[in-house]
Length: 244
Image 1: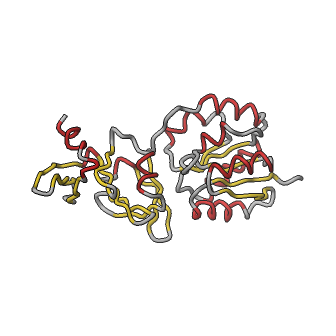
Image 2 (image 1 turned 90 degrees about the vertical axis):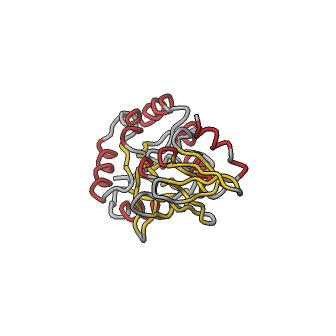
Image 3 (image 1 turned 180 degrees about the vertical axis):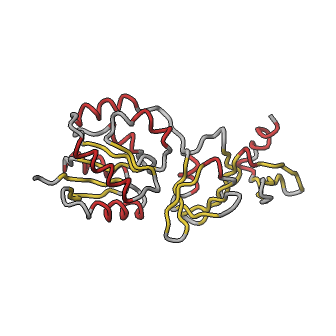
């Protein structure tokens, strides 16, 4: 039996490594390439023409959706993403399967079994998928790191996000998590009706702004967990929005 050729596309190195680890235990599948961003993925998929791709959705530079729209060759697809199940309902009938991060080994195996059983034309599935792609989507979950573990936390639980060099610290009511994405990348994927940037180093959830106080240096936000965050002059329009 000819092996199923696989390409992995994910900007998270831990996520790529987990997929490779699980895939290596399946002799009917062979990994032919991995890509760390969507721009790289388009060229690799068109050139190597894999049978199957594991595709993340939220990636800097080019999203998974944008990758699909630029393909000349249409493989089978399994989403590997931190999007929740509701956001993926529109694609469930067209993609072979999706893996919601964090997922188990058993869940991964179930996805591979679906690939083996899937007899529909991959190109038609892909065309249906492309037609269903929304013009704008926002994160419902954010993939973060705690120690050596990858966790998907609900956006609704986030109080604020703080820049940490090229990374970001994500704060909830009970904990703090590290994201290897920069604060600008994360903010661009959040709903602006739910989050606001108040400083080069801070993004705050609107629902967790307890009060805004004014002193001689300007404005300061108090969050629901009593964190005090200065509002920089570049983002001072947040004060007027808060009054509305």
